[in-house]
Length: 237
Image (cartoon, rainbow, N blue to C red; front, side):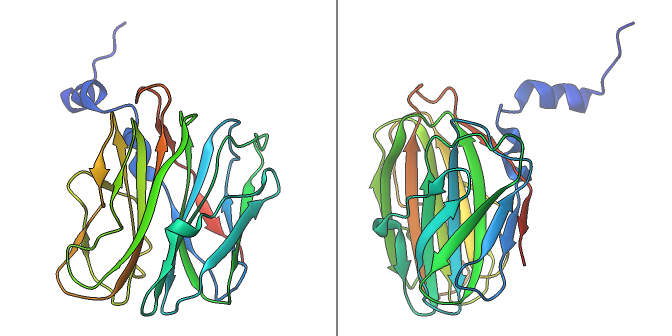
């Protein structure tokens, strides 16, 4: 017998994009530490790309390295690691991850000194094209730039920023807000179907000092296979 579904559910099934679950991911903040750890529960899949966006508040300690037991050392590019007036950001990533065979994956950051770290840790599929562009910037007035990039094709763009003052952010019109810690941090993403020029600039209702970074990864399949895998993130004491 055919089960009748409510109209609202039918409409969602027709109109929701394949990556609609992207807003269901988690973030975490660490204790005051020079080597905080964060865990992707449920493990990671082989071939996926792992990205950690790091916001350091109330100080200017930088991210110098990241690693996990399954893959070893991650890449933490100097061009996406910047500090300014009690705010700092960093981005680290690992392309083509090995499978953790269903086991939780713990990522360890190494910082220049102990500080508070607020992070967004994500897993992406369909990024076999690898790293495309990155930039970094500081700013003191709205809209707050992350530094301009021009991507060379379809893929995903991610940004991280830290404010020197707490406030409510308004996302860039092209981006979707990732989940934030509401601790002066701001994370967002944009899945693109072709080349794009953007600085990911977002707005605040007041002026403050910020640090920001932006990074993009290419989808070698032309935008058809990039998907976000939400994972439940927990911070380790």
